Length: 373
Ligand code: NAD
Ligand code: GLY
Image (cartoon, rainbow, N blue to C red; front, side, top):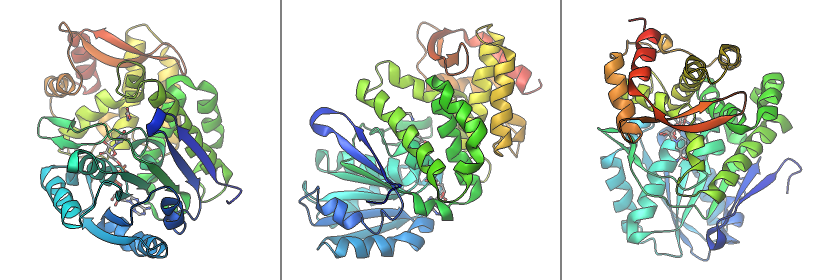
């Protein structure tokens, strides 16, 4: 094991699993998987960008352990999280004759991970599933915790199942080929863990983000491992989001509405960028509700802007719909209880909480102000 490698365990009883984080893990994937799973047939689902770079190396590593590989390469981008690609994945897994002891492997970012996990969750009422996340976002968030699914014309992630992976292999070397914009987008989810309940981590990021962005080295691996540990702790306590897990949605209520408003067009907005703008809005809205100071919102905005993330809605190219339309998307994304909305708000740095009594009228006037109307 490399000195830089870290392991985080997600404790879920007999469904517990390891997240291995470090360099060179794709080359070692065959050995890691063969040591844990009996099956010797694996469907690998990837996208065109990731497949072109890493599918051969993964196939060779699996073949060296006597594992037969059945690859499927899909178009890259958020629009792949939809019904037609889901059907292709399910058919592919069935045609490859993947049995219950075999596995379906997701090789890619969060789009491939969410889609593949959903297919694995529903084929034969649940097939083994391995995540090999290749984007920063997928390594720190989407590959961990078992939320899988696709988008609907009614909104983001509205169709899916909980289906935990058997293993997560986060090879940090592959981040070197991630486009800088996508690295920044993943960083929004890293910063999120600090803002939820780890003020010391956020302060460390404010000082050390350049080391996290620099290729290789311990700061990047430390940030990924700390993020996975934070998520694993929450998932172990609240796998199905009865309460605590909702905190992981900090920034997502606004962010998902913006993703829907931009038609899931990755050229205009990618998920992590929506989360960045959404976290700033959540802090500004908390200040407006007199829960936290406006200085905190400015501090969060300053940090996310420093790393190069968008921090306000007017940075999204191509114009946005009205405040009323955004509010409709928000109401669709998060259940409305007794006419009130649920948001993750904050009382201070790293003091986020679930507010389930937010009046829609307050959100509407806030959005109108922010949209300048
Ligand atoms: P993505 O999967 O679209 O990947 C971003 C882009 O980077 C794609 O073009 C991809 O081909 C490319 N890419 C990925 N790895 C690469 C690499 N190593 N080298 C070169 N290019 C690479 O997007 P994402 O940001 O990884 O994931 C976003 C998705 O994750 C959203 O759909 C979001 O809803 C979902 N998500 C899910 C959870 C969850 O708990 N399931 C949590 C957070 C986000
Ligand atoms: N990304 C939110 C969750 O996994 O619960």
